[in-house]
Image 1: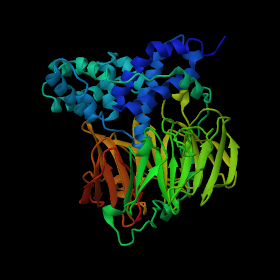
Image 2: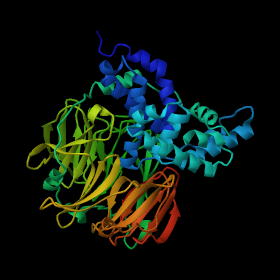
Image 3: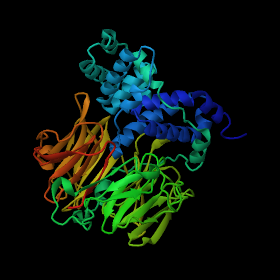
Image 4: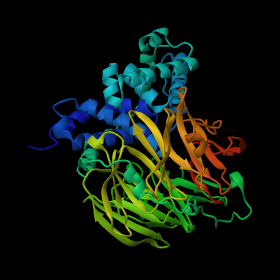
Length: 170
Length: 378
């Protein structure tokens, strides 16, 4: 049996989703590509162990920790996104949508890596606190603190952010 | 605004680039390894004083006599010809760096040029044919000529240049670690040692090479071996929980460790192994930058929802003192020190010169995406 049997199918099925999460975590296409490929390489190396379980969760955990690790080791965090990419994205309700997107980009860029990871995993991936704690390798209390602090920071920058989001974090 | 909806929309801008073939190629070079741990005190027994005068060695010979302050800073920018990066020297020259994609991970000024260290997504164009030739590292002389220091088969990520730019280490796919001196014409006096599979980080501490392994290949490096390539001594299981070690003058060392989820700084006397001071604080994070005299520390920290640079008088801080006001704020803080103990901080596109009290002595704008190489006046 090929030790990597099923890996290619996994990448085809979930690679794009992992790329989207990576992009939200770091805000740079190039860094997101590095994050995804590194996570996939490590997932492949341990494929026999993880493929019967939750390989996507395993890869996601690698991305979250690797991103924090890179920041700690290299200080190589880059601005969240190229504003020109955001402006050029184009949508039918372009003016309001673009404004919202730019505001969100700015607010995410102001977060610390762990806060941003917690926010992305909670409100984009819809993970529970337990799942986020597992993905980040921290306690539930740390997850709560990061979400709360992150949302408080975003709220300061985005007054129109839904009130319910702060309630969720409490 | 609904956060969930907006995050979903933003995520849709991510390009699709996940490749199973590329991942498999990389995976086949890596395997997990489990190692036992040794106490932190072992760090003190091995950490040695770096000849700090050699740190931040700078170029110093590129027509900058008489220049000072911000004008002595060298940096690289993306977007050069053929997609390569461009090195801006203190003398005002612009040298095309033969590297692609996200740029090289490290650029260190050495007396006869610059040493480039690539990463997995930034490839050096070793033969100048416009095609990437793999990762590894290369030496660019002051005329812009490139000499590869590692072969194209070297692990694209795992290479490390010592702080003074005199030594380079790299890992080959057969789990053999190579170290060579960086001479005027390239790698010299190469030595090798086999290592266990699963190496995740290489880092120099003086002339000792720390070899980091991550348990489960997921978290930060937790286990460290140490190799002295000059004597050939190899000490496995050097320490656990260590994030970074910086050797200081007078047989002292500063060690960053993680205890119960909290980052801590430990100040050690390396001659006795005694702990001279320790402080754990949630804001501590990021790489350690220490001034050449070993008295001042610049830390990236998380504070009130953002990332700020903190300047610390080391001994005062370990005795309960508070950091000075921040110099630099933002996600990407790059630092270099002047011989006088002042520092340059590049935050986004803004380069600041600051005193150790946090006072801003000067500032100027650099192009977006710039990376700080160092001060050629140092």
